[in-house]
Image 1 (cartoon, rainbow, N blue to C red):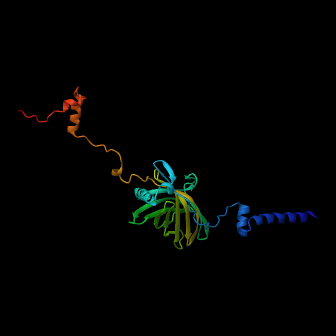
Image 2 (cartoon, rainbow, N blue to C red; image 1 turned 90 degrees about the vertical axis):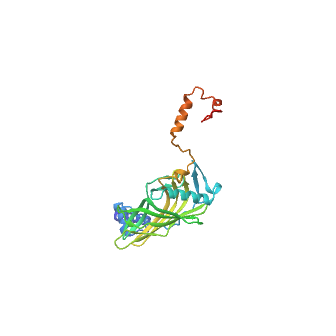
Image 3 (cartoon, one colour; image 1 turned 135 degrees about the vertical axis):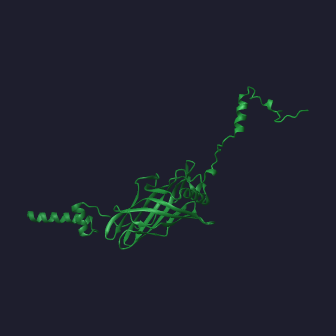
Length: 284
């Protein structure tokens, strides 16, 4: 076999290996990946959000599964206090670890396509603009403003009308009806999110759970994973007057005078000398 034939066979084998590893890629994309080494952003994931089996609730510096010692009403009331304490506040959002309930990134990200341009969308905070409750129902009305960016740009987004629903001690969901973001000049894209809680820390204001976010319209895509929301305030106290602490009050001049008089008396420790004292003695 001639050297030319050997070179042709070797070249064919090499091309076969390279194309075999990227059979689903367009030839132009293969060229970008092989020659230039540019990473290609994959399609948005379409997996359903992971539903946790139980919810861990932390209170008084102790954490335990809610279904073992808490009712749905207790979780609902705690969430009402937590959200109302943080009304009109901005909470931080981070990509989290579902085992340790700690942040691994200072944002969550998802692959999207804006027009014809592949990009990544990021969410790093949310402002709680309004909180309201409905009598006799187990959900909380929330008005949330997510801070979304992509490719260094911040689109104009409408507030997300959301519901925090407590079905039972093992099923707490935060979802919205969809909100719009103007990410292209063509028109607005619809964003819809779902958040299944598995961690509530009433002491430090943490909420953790599995999220799924999807975009539809001129900008489309989405993703899912685990995220943590860090609220500025904890779940208690709801108001200062509800605290179980002794209030310090100003002493009157009469109290100060009485205390100083008793202290100056060398017999002040003897309670018997005050038993028959009359403020206004009457002459017989």
